Length: 111
Length: 112
Image 1: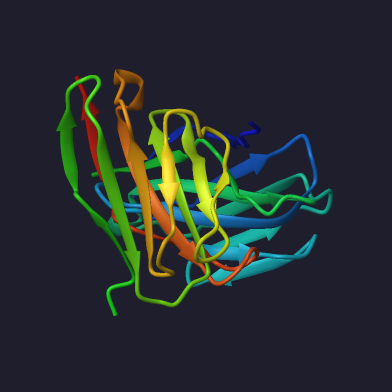
Image 2: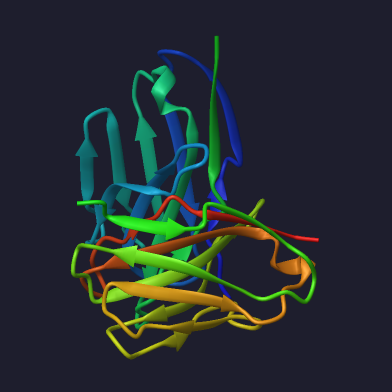
């Protein structure tokens, strides 16, 4: 099955820094989602995108649905300690009702 | 309103043993899903259901069976556990195909 290419795999940043991560696919997607997973918990939806070019914010988080419909980006501004976790992109390919997940970006904040 | 709950939280099995993982949701969602999460692999869909009494195969269905006898419950069965099934299993539910999926807290399974 197809998996999305998510990068970077891990990030080590200092508190207050901005964060950028992205997800790419070889095929067209109708929906892009970004989830965050805390240790020992299930993923929680952060942002959902449904249209090419769409730019959506949720507090300090901003995500974009790529114009080509083959990629998506997530930015976190002014990171804080509670941003630590694993971020997953997920998408629904055109003509397919099932979600495909990326391999995750592990965010660590260095004291 | 508990959302999505999973039972048990953690289990150790010997190779060849069987077990059933229970997922329950109280949001009246039609769709339910079982995923497994392995290091570096993200989440992979095992089976899913689009309504009571229905089930369908996902990306990695081999070695698992599911049942959706009641709308609120989705059971994942392992008939003969193998070490390759050591993983974290997540259940999720949603209103529909393009609706947000809500995840449970996960079940950690270790097969020796």
